[in-house]
Length: 296
Image 1 (tube, rainbow, N blue to C red):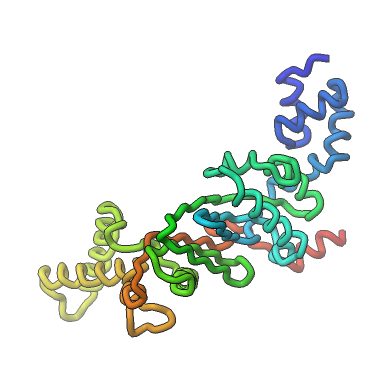
Image 2 (cartoon, one colour):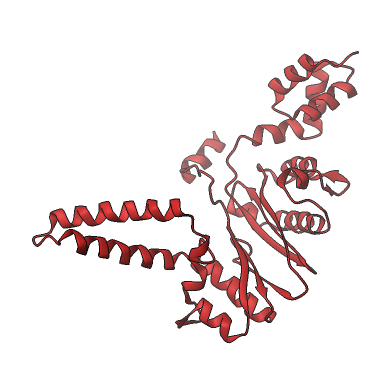
């Protein structure tokens, strides 16, 4: 029987499974929709597809390096309980090893990397059934350094936060110190030179409105030239706080990060920080109600 696009769409609408899985199911069952649904269920794909609509905002952020290559990515699940499960941790480790040895440089390329002989996309789908929760792969990024540069990396609380740094020269311990600092202080930029003019102007506008409102409510309003100086002072302070090189170094707040790395004869080329669930809108659940709903 010819497997038409309409037939594939019909099965997809009924099961929520992916287009390729639906087509494969129809081929295996000679175009019989009901048998194809059973086939998807037997493979755990239909069940996994249903879970795919559930929010996965927990999980692990992973960082790994090999020679001059480094990677970071996030693998999400629905609950912290599963994120700490040995099976889930093993999944992250297995995916990490294959991605590190691949040529993938984007999410789409990563999904095609073979894990246990299957494309990552398919491997994750099958893993949903064994783990019992929705799993999603996101924020994959690769890093390359020269022989003269040094990687630093750090994972906090088993992967709640993962960071990677590239230093110009220096020792691993220094690079790791900076990776730990990035995990703790969450800088947005390496230096003020990286901040766009639009971002700076937006921050200036916000601070100006804040200062004008304060001045309007003050018993002794300040003249405009003083307000302008005050805004610029606050702006410079805020910009320094979000720039890695200007932050007080966590191991010695009396010196800045830049001063620390200079004392070690090195400088920071780049960094990356991932924290689990960033950018995912989490659903607030009542745990007691959720448990009771399972009992009914």
